[in-house]
Image: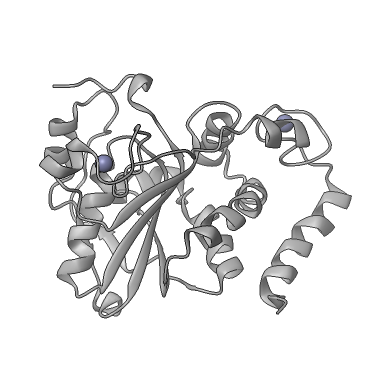
Length: 242
Ligand SMILES: [Zn+2]
Ligand SMILES: [Zn+2]
């Protein structure tokens, strides 16, 4: 079946391209928003992954870290490794409000997400803190979550999850510091009750933010919580181990 609303959404961007020649979000070349060269350079995160946290490991099943301290979502998966050109594109989304780039990236993620076969009712982007939202004026994660929800035919719910407290940036914190930083950071509205939720973020490192959001969603009665990011920072990307 053709998903007409998604087809319409996509053709809107194609129409705009005729007026304003697009620039690639990965390399800056003129011609398309996500050029074929950048598409080929994306490092898809596949292979043997921990069933829960989605990090690469050499055997199937649940990794030792998740056995010792299990995250609260059912599973976390990422489309790609947090390296260029995806890293550059995410940076552009975050600071340049490139909604069309969000759409272009999402179009390449849809197949991956469908293959996961998760039973989803609702897609919820991780919200920014009030202060950061005020400064930036938009949530870059919504620019992926909205077209993804359209493509999957699942409800897009950008308002059901809220930040209850301002949290400092997770950059440079150890896993324990990250968990503490985001503990009780979120609140979820009653609309999530009984639903299978996909929480979406742009990048995950340890997954603490997504796990904390799962706490809030379960507290408001969510049936199950799955977590997805566009990219995953692998442990060699500079996370300090405490
Ligand atoms: Zn490119
Ligand atoms: Zn794990």
